[in-house]
Amino acid sequence: MTRNSLAEKNCSLARALDVVGEWWSLLLVREAFFGTRRFQDFAANLGIARNILSNRLKRLVTEGVLARMEGAGGAVEYTLTRKGEALLPVLVTLMQWGDAHANDDPPPVILTDRATGTPLPPVEVLAADGRILTRTDIRAMPGPGADIPLRDRLLPRQSLG
Image 1 (cartoon, rainbow, N blue to C red):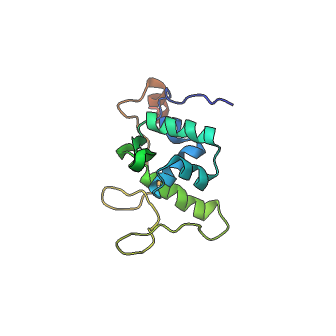
Image 2: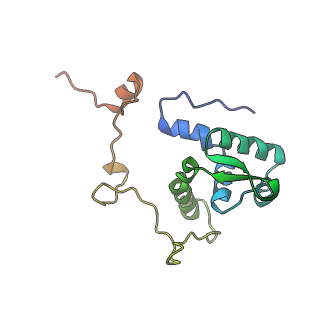
Image 3: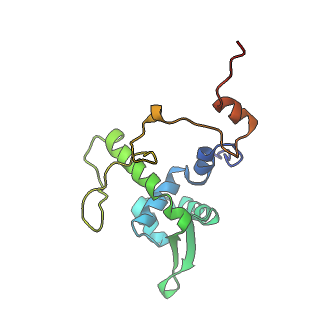
């Protein structure tokens, strides 16, 4: 089953999902954050078929999320790039959401602050002044890259009367 590309959509979320929206991709990024580097370790830790693993690793390298390099003894290793490391808040948020809303069991992994050992607090969206923002506090406005249909959807219609 082939999926349609979202790369041409006028939506940052759609474009992000085009790069990392397939579930194996984010699980590979999670494994890289956990320190997994080698093909056989990704395969063993995830139970993923080798052909799928190969395709997903190639895609993540092509997209600049992972870098492919020669490790010790000439073995190929995959490491997170800066672009890949920028996914940390996304992964933490998804893990916390999964613990709260997609899992009836105790959390399988507890993310902690390495310096203090304390669990990470819930990820929240904050205003510039530090206030916690909810859905009703946020307004979507067209950005400089918005096309006309998006601008029309986001800008309030002005009444003529």
